[in-house]
Image (cartoon, rainbow, N blue to C red; front, side):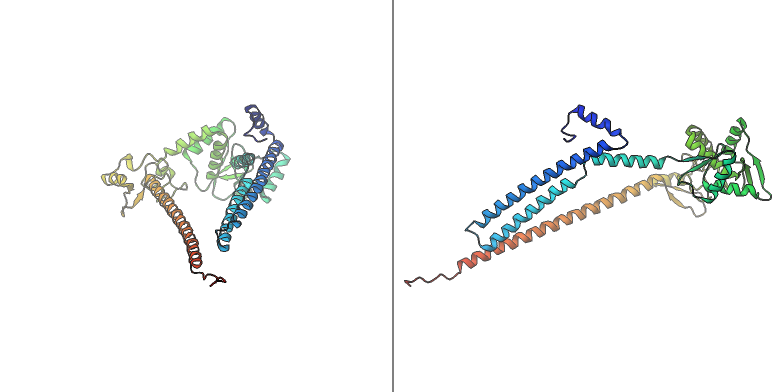
Length: 369
């Protein structure tokens, strides 16, 4: 019995049992649906074969047609039968509704698996050494992170921290990570002000991390485990000026927020809503913005397109691509129509030739002539 033929209660019962982890019920439903489709296809096949046989017999029994005309009509009927059989086969082999549900569930599961991050906590005591040696020598699961005293670190960051702990760099300033409530205050200062330089390190229970790596670990931990706290950190970073962010990975001539103003000339390089000195634009910049871009206050006066302009270009390209596809489809249709017209003309020409041959055929002489 098909799902569409069931009553509402039966359908509810079916979909309620779809939570079965072994998928036995769904597999049974799919096999039943395939059986029904196969049966329908075989019935259709028999009907098509009988119809074509009848039509061919009628054509061959006609006396008003020549042999070539009869054969031409027979070929046409056979071609029609082949097309009908092909469409019936396509319906049989099309994906079942239950199969679609199973594939959707599998896709959802894979997506959830991708989105989830495997977090490996660093053990204490005797197991710590074994974990460290394993992390240094083996590849951890893809996308996994190591949790260590309020930080989320990648395998590379953790291993480099272990190595630098054994051989600390000379002339570097090493800060120890505080514990308890002091750690929260320390982390908030690290995130908001980022007071570290290249030679600054933080010691975290047997791991010596570079200042910026420590900051990334704090931010990663906040992003995955405490989204509200991470949003607060993000707001604090948006309010920073170019001088505060200078040397923190941003390029002077880059555009971090995508507002059309380079980082060096942007008062808030990470805030899209604020551009230029004192958030004021010159007349030339205003005119450029109306035209679809920002005119930069540089010697060469570069012209960068805004995000809206980029979107417009992308939409225009999409439109052109769609129009090309439509033109190609129309051309293909015209080609098919021309081919059909040629075939019809050839058939009519054959008929005319046969008629002419019949007219000019020499009559048999009778006995009395």
